[in-house]
Image (cartoon, rainbow, N blue to C red):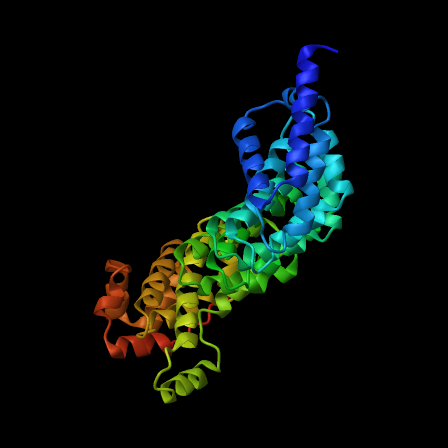
Length: 404
């Protein structure tokens, strides 16, 4: 045995003895020293330093983790040290040991513990992502441990955007090269759309654009929560929702999405009741009414984007009497953005379908129609109450049959 090997054994025995008898501060210092010294160390170098017995130190860290993670004792240091071991070239051995003692369940619990710091949740997600990168078998193991549900729950409830982004990245990773569970990830992302976190909604819609082509078949349960995202006051959420709707025009939920977009251009019958109830509540913020108006404007905008994709889509909207609803939205004096977006979208139909131009001119009258053609973007600012009422009470019914 060489002098170097003897020194390594001696150092290891001293370290293990110090760890076993050491206080919390002693163990924290050992972990911090290890983290600083081994940021860019290979698996071979770690094994040589620990006399080819690095597992003795690794198992002590994982054992302490399972005992203390509920109270958060040195949790950041433990997770950082574990990540170093799992990132080394000889990490297969460490990963096997890590999984055998049930630390995967520990990580999944950490990310949803109320008392867990957001930094620690991010570190735990990072390690889970590291495990997923080992290949399909390990992705399946994470999923079999109810990992998808835990990660999605963490993403929905987290107060940190960094944590949410890490959780979202992990869900996307689990969907790729994992045919057994890709549909489960897809459904998990759909379940995130109605959550209360705008960032989680944005990320889920964004990732669905990646996962949808992987699973091929779209799910009808996606339609309602996706359309509901158009109520969001966060422009980035609306943007991702519209982009996802654009993608879904090539899938079997296309018809349902188009019908829903046309439908929400007109208020539900219960809107007047909501208005009445919110007027009676002096401290009411008229949230329900605003939600509808925001969604109405977003729907008009979305339709304007979709009809530019293909003539077939435009014809399908026409067959559903979208013109009647767009003119109705133009008369919404309570929300200028609805008027503006509906007017801009209506301009497309008027310019591209002569039959639409004839019906719209007849419904609006010469003066309003001329003003509309001159400046559809700014018409709402000059529209009189009488003209708005003409729009809301329009009876346009274009007998158009889609070729789709």
